[in-house]
Length: 464
Image 1 (cartoon, helix red, strand yellow):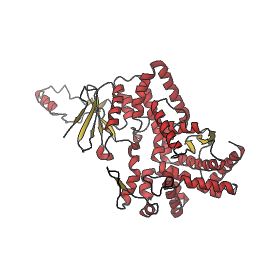
Image 2 (cartoon, rainbow, N blue to C red; image 1 turned 120 degrees about the horizontal axis):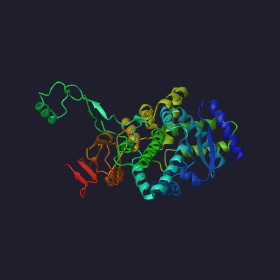
Image 3 (cartoon, rainbow, N blue to C red; image 1 turned 45 degrees about the vertical axis):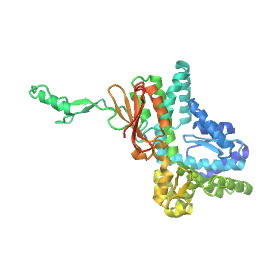
Image 4 (cartoon, helix red, strand yellow; image 1 turned 90 degrees about the vertical axis):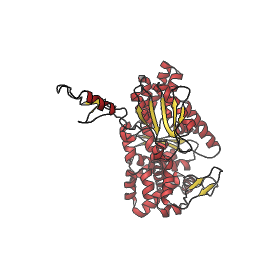
């Protein structure tokens, strides 16, 4: 940092703590834009090597060069936290970014979902991710690029399919279960029992049996494959568990995006407003940058068909602080995620003031604005956040021959699968499962369809 920005940073930190911000120390670093782009795409400064990150990088680069996005900062929660600022930002922009980061740091330390995640994973995700990358590099040296990439294809293809409610460290299923007294397991057992009606009393009925795998639909696909894939080697299992650990880190970031960005925007606006040590021209330029960040529309458009989380979150927090006070706002910040935040605090009047609306996209390209319904608007805002943004898929059965059965619970998430992508992911899973794999879903007509991999030439069947 140059001396002026370093001075502003120290004084903003002191002001933030005076106003009630509570956060772990933050390590600020100025870095080149190319590095900013890389860490934004990879999600972490050093991460496991895989071709999919290159695809994301090209997409982000195109968006940036077309003026559709600008990366001001990238923040990583932890103790200490880390914040990367572009060295091409102006001092005015980076002053605002520093204030914004302090809001993020306060949020990540005190929000319960973030705090639970950091307690499970640890407070040094950057170092842990670098260690993961080193392990995978060693695996490439030992087992070859092609084999390692096949495992990463499957693991990263399932990176959203975790179950945060079961926790990061969970044991395998019990191998045995108690047999309830008097229970007849099935028709065959009933008939068999009649043949043995005169079995001597000295031969008691078994009190336990092999437990079913899984005992219930299992939504944590990364965990299940790591634990139960029949021929997975230890190094392959480790890759699945590494991807899963990083997914647990990213989940709170995804599930609290509107709250988190809004909270950081509220605090950067307030800190700059109350920082009487900032020169007037710097404050004006920072305020202009703030306006660009929290504007509801893209460019010169007057209507947007997507939500700017900075704008929505900032508007909601301002309204909450205004009507309920800062202490109540902090309590909400600590306890909520985006689901409860939007459902509890996006009121009908706020939605009207923000010009929010629900719409339907027709096949001919027309956009039809639906009648104003606040519940529909709330759910439309949250639609893409359910289940970490992924279809609701679970393991439903593991057959005796090792066949893995999956089911897409379309009645829960209300969405169909992209069948082309589903076939590709199923192919990836089959490579590591090394037994037949199938997933039950629905087609465009709402009819049951089963996609298979590893069964033979006919891989798709439909029930009419």
